[in-house]
Amino acid sequence: MGLHTVSISHRTDIRLSEWVIIALIGGLLLITPVSAYQIILQAPSSVVVGEPLPVTGTTTLPVGTTFFVVFSRSNQMTEEIAKRSVTVQDDKNFGVVFETGGLEGGIYKIEVPKIPDYQLLGDSVTTRVVELIDRSSELEMRSPLTQEFNGILWISGTLKGSKNTGMKVTVMTDGTNIFGPEYIATNKDGVFSKEVPIVSPGSYYVSFADTISFIAMVPMTVTSSSPTTQPTPSGFQTTSPTTSAPTITATADASRDRPAYFAVTSLGGPLTLRTSSGIDWVIEYADESGGRQKVNNEGSTGAEQVTIPQVAGTLSVKVYPYKFQDNGTVTLSGENAGTIQVMGSPPPVFADQTPTTTPPPTTKSPLPGVIPMSAIGIFIIIMFAPYRR
Image 1: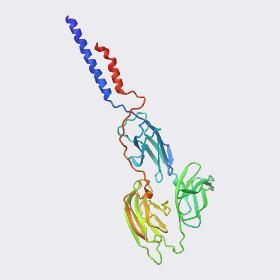
Image 2 (image 1 turned 60 degrees about the horizontal axis):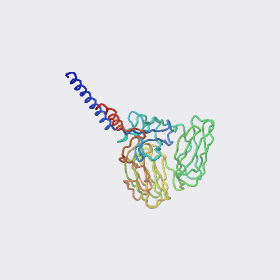
Image 3 (image 1 turned 45 degrees about the vertical axis):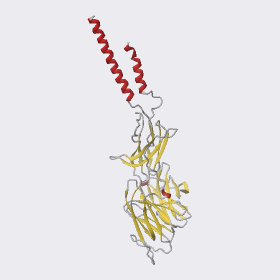
């Protein structure tokens, strides 16, 4: 009897220990988070500075989920350049495009940062390294970037290292191609030249490429010929010999992501706008037809300037640095201006900026085809049920 009693007590202790272990395992499985998703990011390994950088990808995240794709410079300290929001659609594919104009050559990266409330599978690809190749130093312009209107835009320059290979040229104004793309000849020294017919003064953008890739985009300005304007020595401002137009100024902070906006009125007649120097500024303004004109002829050492023959009503002006990494305070002066006011938000003509949005809260959904871990816990409990007998 003593042996039989000890045997029963021992078996009872074993059953109790097994049930404690089973309960612990089942409880842990029931409370373990199991949502796991995948993101596969795709981007080219290299892009020439000035070309758009396309980024695509696929994901298993639930439809309607919003996350960010970040474009940054990969150096000792990560420097964010731009960020785009992505909302998952029915086909689970996504795509964004980043501009590379004004950036320096070097190593950059595309990344999807951690998404709150979502766990990604280990085989997800959320980072891609991209090399930006700057070929602009291979191009040397020989024709002036500012020319007086005579019905011809003269384009001439040298492509270093090019011998009789040809240069692909495209000329645009107001977003419309007026010449090319067309290959023009380069001689044995890489020199090319072309006269492109134009019908009016304005801002023109000349795109250069060869058989290898895009090289650079060069802005050129054609001004109205003025018989009353007298040549002046370098370093002096040009003024009217008979009258002195009043000049007023306004100052605002500006960066590539947060441009400065101004509302300018004219006293009548030509209006000359001029930025401060020290940063390579870009001026954009809306013309009479509602189109947008861009002026960028000077570097960081010179003041950007544009003369508008006639302004009706209020002129909307946007100023920002050409390089993404630059930011600072810009002073906009207006010669023959009535008023210059700093605007706190973009005017309608410039209201197409990409807003920064915060991803909305979403409900987690497990990856299709994955068996819920809670079901596995229940299965284990059922398998051990015979030990109760």
